[in-house]
Length: 391
View 1 (cartoon, rainbow, N blue to C red):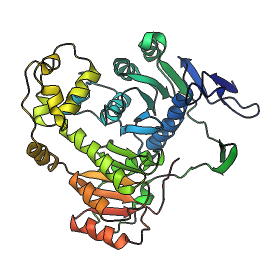
View 2 (cartoon, rainbow, N blue to C red):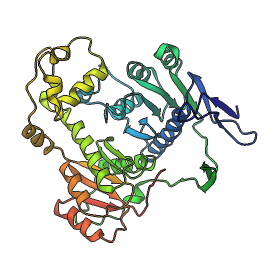
View 3 (spheres, rainbow, N blue to C red):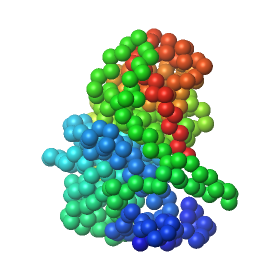
View 4 (cartoon, one colour):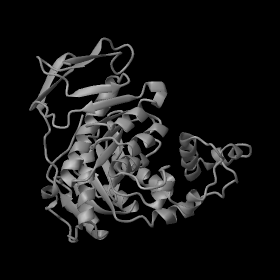
């Protein structure tokens, strides 16, 4: 198939719409179920590039959860801890690596992953399909599907769930083009390989960069390569825990991503883990309740006559001091930036959310100030020398 007609473009008034290949070339993808739209395919193709690059760079299965052409989360296929199983709604028992990867990717920011597009570096198996079937999601892209997985996914959304199969060895043309306001833009495809060679220029006094931190740096940088700029990404133990995308200033990216990382960590506070929800509560309702409970808006969910709809027992308030003390325990976090940190304030904000390792291009006229700030906190910072803007 050389083209696929779509219902409309980004908005219903934008017609006609299609995806297509020039000449006689066939599309490198196949729609196995559903009718994906314009934005669905933008998410699918960006997210596929991310997970394919992660798998190539680390050798591990990878997954991503995309919304509006940026990742809400990305992760490697490492086993889930008991706490992760609890806070991500993961099923009991042994799970495949690719299922673990997607569960962790979606768990990075469950609110932003609501209605996501999922991407898998490996064949989608039944474990992954069963988890996807229970989540609010628009579609999935993968290099293949087991028969059992496809049958499960075809039952989702009354049979309309979007399932796309991508040719795993497809390579795009070396030159890419797009039209904006009737004007054609042209540039070379960004085939930059992100690997451990980019991490060798450690500029801080502390140069102890363990293997797991290298993997987290690669994860942060590859995620940023496919995130709308400006962007900053916090990573811990092989999964993103906060992505700040599309901000006009670097510090706002760092704050946004850091705040998301704090929320991810607060979801593991003993008081949150101990919340007793009413039977049959929907996953999104539980996630929204937790978000309100750990925010300054806890009165909205704990008000008289309201909490009974969510909790079996009215929970104690998680105080500001308790939240501050808990966040102070977070450590070993890696932070990546798609462009240089212009001031040391970005490093200070990252440190508040447990940052120990930083990967950024360098090149600011204030690099010395940024390095000195990292040294003050005994961080390890590497200058990659490569900007990763994505628009």
